[in-house]
Length: 324
Image 1 (cartoon, rainbow, N blue to C red):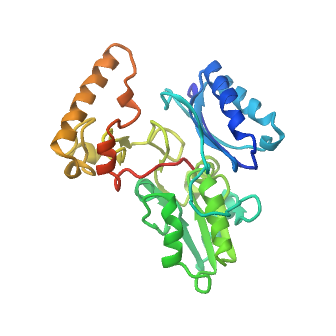
Image 2 (image 1 turned 90 degrees about the vertical axis):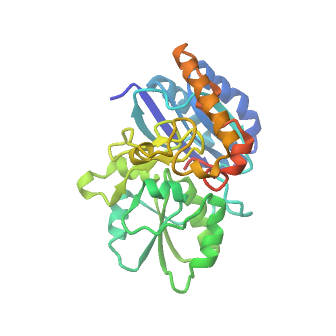
């Protein structure tokens, strides 16, 4: 087992004092060398963090001392190196942004299914299987025969439902996401729209890969994750994808062999969308990153694209990402 534990966690629960939790959570993460991002909102907590076994256990124990978070949902995987460079605790309006007022998964939600029950349900020819994740995640891997809504952000999902799904025609709908959190909201939304039989995979893809033997799996490809590993395989080990430091899109080995790929500068997804001045700035950033690594330091460019101009240019290729 690798030394670093990667823990994806969330809980929908009323946290009226969520602002007061920010500073002590930051301190716990700092004291125990925990990196990653936690989101706090009135509706609960969400995030992915990484540390030693002791560090993760300390954080989970601290959170679970609050009775509201005693049954915090967690999924764990392992890696050799820390997949995050910083520790962040952010205050948000939503812990996963759907943008629809009145959605409360603690009151209305779809039917949870275990991985074994999920496999059984998907054998039903009347079931429509919908991937609630974004298009770039779907391209890395998905369940066999899953529908791709081709969304660039979770905010676009309600529009997909309005345009393509009908409660009278689609009587059984199964939905899934990375760790389960997006399906909490998407199935609650579907129930509000009059869909009766709505199912979702408890614990998401990560729990499915953890519990389902490869020979019984209906999963195809790898699973995109929101850290430096980029993707994980069926054994929850680091996958074959890398990340373009210009547009932050997952790229394959074939992408990296393309003439349009320059490390830190461009890839086949963004090469034709970047201006010459942007590419020049990215080349300089890449040079500074490499120099920092030689000195054993971390450069800011290792973590984020610092150019707001590039972010605007690449808006369609680099949608807002929320874990789950």
